[in-house]
Length: 496
Ligand code: C2O
Ligand code: CU
Ligand code: CU
Image (cartoon, rainbow, N blue to C red; front, top):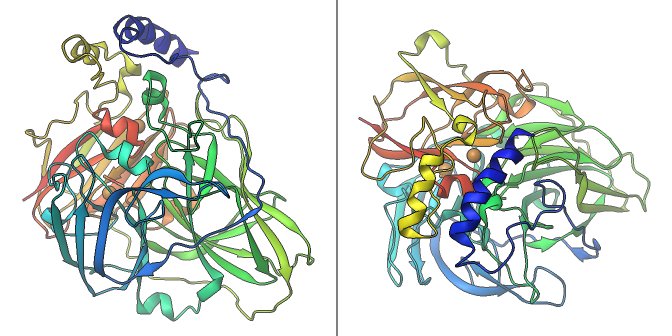
């Protein structure tokens, strides 16, 4: 396989440079380049993060969290005693006033993924709070209902800090959504799915080697809301599952273990126009899915799983199926809920309104970018630049694209020559996906809605259409495989 050959070449170069300063073996993966999942016992109940409104303090800190029952793991948190921050729940139109306190020993900040904020409030990689400092995020949430999220974005440390536990859900509600009477309260469950790698003390460990930077840092333990392999008791009725793939590199092909269908009602930027029935759904890092699962036809005592099915995406992803969490149907109930044919209004941005098409080559020249490796000699471990956009590595002093406030453009992400997957994400806006060529050759259900992250498997080319907002300033676009992002697969654009 091409990718493996290339990695071996890079490793041969890398090992010479690295072996002097690194003790563990670089050959840690046993199944090609995939990191196999080790399922837990599904005996720990699912936890739901506490919620707060748009006012409060988030303190990035070193703390512990109970990921495996009976054990405390060392993690990072936005609150003491747990991985994952509180869920921020607000109505559209509300003002946010969040005091961010950086109690880490390195720079940090908060990026509001999917939210449309002024440039200075977006958590740009250069807008950071130094260790011990704080920053107040103030903006108005002026967009539709949806499940957004927040995580750190300091230049070079995003992957590590997000991986070690800094992330949280940001739910926006609005009147349009309210009229649908979707399952709510206990029946609306946020599910943040993440994979983690642990050391012998069950502490989270972040020490990517060269293969991890290639594939994304994948872990063997799958966590939901910070708990390894949990279970959830459900009643015989409809549930609304609001799923975030908060993993650094792992893609999930979500499915129910009995093969039953479920309904996709929303994506990154809120509700779809109409519900779409599926039996599996691919969700890349950073993406969200709003799902209705109907448990009414199950017998009491049934156990079924939310699982990830296999899929084909190169050497590191989708090779094995595994189970994520267990549902135990324990109580009979009835609901009168039925899905309306129409969920929401989405105005289609017409192609003819686009004044420009920009192309972003994300194929990384089949990773022939050995030029990027030259930085290794002087700085030893930098290794930046194996992943690039338009053959460029992120540079804070360079504006890569300049766009006009209020204008509409088509952006092409081209992975047709690539052999890795890249979930491409643009800050400070929501876009619509026009088409996908190569690979799957079609759009999936979530891609009929508003999106801020779009997954490109090897061989795929995707067009998205964007109307830029009125918030002028600098934002970034990047691959949301966070190892790729920290490796330099990020560009800056400025809205003028
Ligand atoms: Cu969730 Cu710049 O990303
Ligand atoms: Cu973002
Ligand atoms: Cu990538």
